[in-house]
Image (cartoon, rainbow, N blue to C red; front, side, top):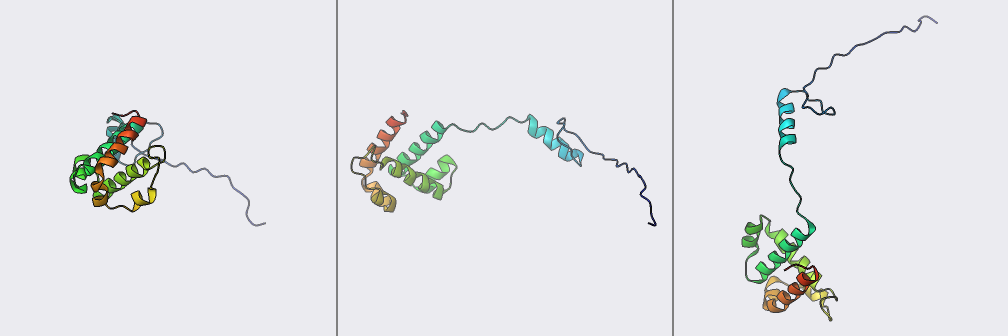
Length: 137
């Protein structure tokens, strides 16, 4: 055996910026400042499930009432495709046998907007039943 083990010690100096949170270490002052600002900013409150239901029913009523996907999307800050998806989600929900004694889910899912609007009184009545079930006015 030519070599013998030697004990050595290596000290590493680490400099970092802190934002006040013991778990955070930042390389630059700018990043630490942004972290502090983020911590101080008010937290975004997630809407409740009931808020989403109210919004979705309002969207369905607007579109069935004659509003375009674009106009409705602008009002709710959503894309046209998201508005279309919400509308047909509501139509699927109101086509459930609980609200419709003779559901025709296939017709609902394959329907075009013009076909749905031709029967808008029926669909608005079904939406009102769903709102009553959800205890939403």
